[in-house]
Length: 111
Image (cartoon, helix red, strand yellow):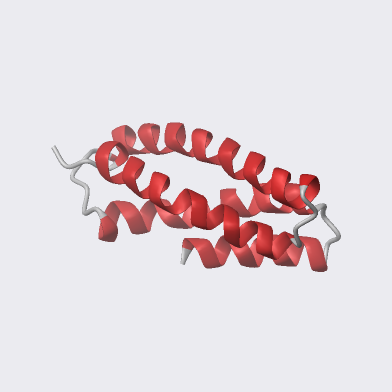
């Protein structure tokens, strides 16, 4: 769901609004992250942490993943000339495992 939100925002921003792909992907990352918090907290990891604690960790992990998403995407799209949707698919594939492990082992770890 979060990835679909990210991609929908990115594609809409590029195709309809004319936003440059790197900026659109960064905005899509934020949209996806908003959707992802509730789903991860409630369903994926069934966290028992207080939201204030989990949210702080979530924001810190997102800062790292946001920078990685932007850097990898920009390298692929602007540096290598990869079509922006393909660049996003590759970037997503590279960040799924680190994002999952960070969320499971630190952000939403059950006490």
